[in-house]
Length: 161
Image 1: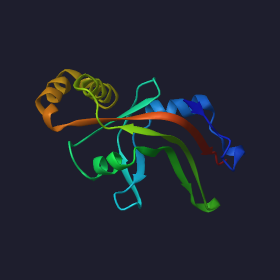
Image 2 (image 1 turned 90 degrees about the vertical axis):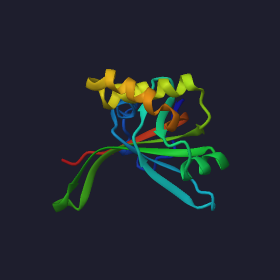
Image 3 (image 1 turned 60 degrees about the horizontal axis):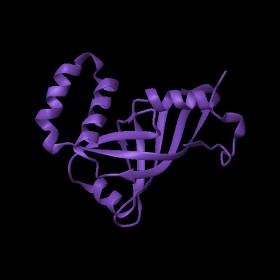
């Protein structure tokens, strides 16, 4: 995975690679963007987990528009939004974000699906892991997990004083 900031116009707003990794690990949600079945843009807000191996996991239903889009075209971008704050009197917004590019794999083994769900539990429900593992098994037949294989990412921020 490459931290690629060459195409960012405002080089003065680069997020350090360390802070970008931190947002990959701790961000609450992001917008997954793909090409729709009708060849238009299609973006959805979605929770995620980064696994420190250049992969991001998402959970979803076993069928639906997202999967149909990804079956047709596996190339995606994913924007993770961190802290934001509107600074009204300065007519601006302080922000931090990470943009990820890569390909999606929507056909994972049962073992990898369980792995992704376990990582999601660790991130979002660490105090309920035992109950969560039981829930995974109960709903596994209707829960899909898909993986974004990261090829590159970049980060930006605007600090307002």
